[in-house]
Length: 442
Image (cartoon, rainbow, N blue to C red):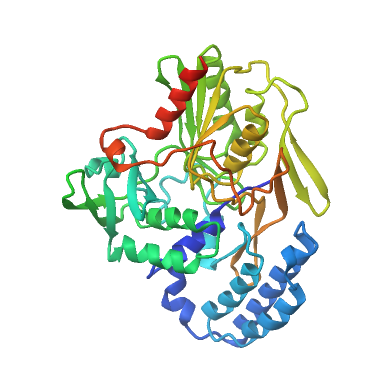
């Protein structure tokens, strides 16, 4: 099973002027043979959703009428862009996450990546700045700068505000996002993803960015992108993801683990197991899922087995056309029994929402941070006749208390937003709130 936001990343990238979807290749006239491939692709998308969607009523959409309206647009398309626009219009009728069309160039780039270490693959689009941003109160706030990263080398600091990258002004990009997704529960996620895309590209590329520093001075930085830090991991046809795990004592007597994706169980699940063993007798344990886009769904209940001692407890239920699949927790030999805090934000999606929402529902954790976007649908990616990739969700997910997470997300017990003053002072208000709660429980 795959839980991926790759389709969301593609949509976010498409909002940036000069992106792949706006290049001349997409706007060049197409011949009848190419047009027929698009028609076949439209039919495959329509049929797959009709047959695989968990809801036979397709979220209340008249699916036949949608086909009758939009298929002629593909048949009359004069460019690849026009044909894809009609397919996207069909998908968007569902108003659900994890459905998307991935242009052939992007899909082939992803599908052709080797299964091992591709850190030296030229032009793999894996350039990273090590700078993490969140949109807070309408500005792109730098929340983290990884040590030994290009961003750190350029002197960027948490608490700075990103104003522009290249020729793109952040304020203009955010207006474009808000206009495109005004009615979507994912608008906050798209804000974050699209802004983050401004600081990415191919390894070796130089991003010229303007920031407002801690003294409110406008500074310009040239950031040479590098291969992301962490262990490369491949899963199916998804892009190579670079896994990073951090385990530490965040405060005396309080353990902490952060990991940036639910991939590669031998790496991530093992790190989680060892963290629990290390802090088994600690006063509390913090699980940081901020910015974690998800991954393999069943890793959530596997990890929960180190926090829950009652056999048969479930985090939730996945509903498919063929039936239900329960996310049952199997207790492990080592179980942390003290207070557990989970940290979330608008970048916590899919499996992160399953784990945080489930632990909250069963009363095993207190949740801190900001609401998640509600992008919790299991999905697959397959190739279409025109060479594009097609991501589609095949199941719904309901939490332990019966709440549908899609479009709703997980609401924290204690809402805490990052703020500029604290970040400039080297503080993390969300972690501090979790630590204070754990102290109060003792």
